Amino acid sequence: MTTAIPAWLAAARKKLGTKEAPGAANSPTIMGWAKRLGTKVLGMVYNADNVPWCGVFVAACMQDAGLPSAPIAVRASAWATYGQRLRFERLSPGAILVFQRPGGGHVGFYVGEDATAFHVLGGNQSDAVTIARIAKDRCIAARWPTGEPVIGGPVQMTARAGQPLSRDEA
Picture 1 (cartoon, one colour):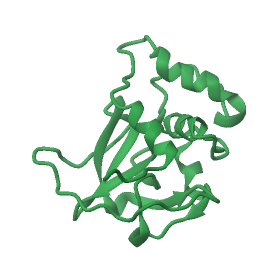
Picture 2 (picture 1 turned 60 degrees about the vertical axis):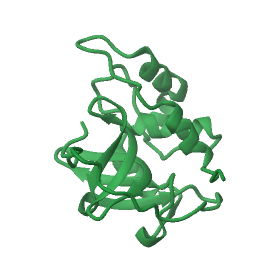
Picture 3 (picture 1 turned 90 degrees about the vertical axis):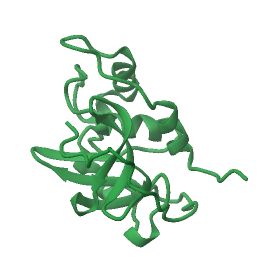
Picture 4 (picture 1 turned 135 degrees about the horizontal axis):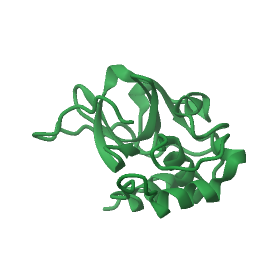
């Protein structure tokens, strides 16, 4: 039996493994997302993948699903007021989670949780699109696109052996 997932999470899963280009080069994939989104959505001219791009990733996934983005989507904190609030006990795969981190914020999609961390599919996690464990106490907002039905509920996972908590996603 296959469980339905939101279209934006399906789009995010297709991007798993996308990486920044090393050194001064830029990933044509990440830069392509930024170009397609444009300055009106991102709120700035985005010209290098060494600029935090977690918001670019989330906005690209939302656009792939035909949904609007947060204003100034490049800023992780802009996603903290996007759509509608989702209670933490009602999280479901695809929920947009916003985190505090040293020097800024981070945004990604909920795929599950263990006792101490959310498992987050996001961009700019170790310079790539990955699933990272991020401490629950760093999460400042859980959001869901307005008008979209919440599919499913919380997904309990075990902490993956050897996978430490992410400390700084930039």
